[in-house]
Amino acid sequence: MILRIGQQKEIIRRIREHVDFDDVYTMARRQSYAPMYLVGGRVYRTVIEVLTENKVGASDVDWDFLVMGKIKKFLVHNPADEWEVEDFQYCKENSIRLRRTRSIERQSRLGIFPSMEVTKMDLIAIKDCARDIKFPSLHNYFQIVPVDIQCAALDLEKNELHVAKVLQCIERGSIAVNNPKVALPNLRINQYIRDKATSLRMGVDKQVAKGSHVCICPMYPTLMRFGCQCGGR
Image 1: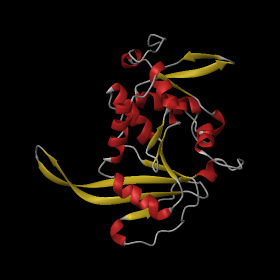
Image 2: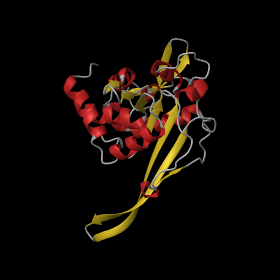
Image 3: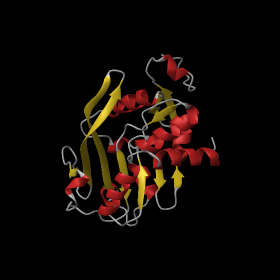
């Protein structure tokens, strides 16, 4: 599968024109001047939505920035920014998670109601991802993500997409374990990848022997149109 120029532009447009992008990117830049990539669900879910027209929550996930250098470990900015450090269940030594909570008004058929909007962003230091690599790079980062579809990035300086593995997943209609050694410590990788696949409306490839894969996708008819070969079993 090849990503056409028009599709690339649409993916980047949707990301950069999101109502929160300017705010989160400005805050990210306050914390680091190093080269930076947007990675994670914001990228690969947007690619899926543009190429398949299936809604997989691209606008609802957190913002993840991969930083190729140092990140400031403190926030001394205008309190009106409403950002705060959130350390709960986030153990990377050189990275930080930020959260902004603010009051907004939501409109429904019954009227206008006050509500709370939470925006989360992670600034991930490359050296937290590849301590044993002398020259950390985006390629090195892609080697350690748990699931292959997570090998997705938008270069924020060059405005270039790196989504080759995402296109492979879309083409075959399933996702696979990329590096089982870095699976989340409190989750079985099989359950983690099943949940991920369900949220993306895809199947799952599981390596059962060297050089062979078998689809173990959940029994959802919507998965079959993506090319799953198990027939929903």
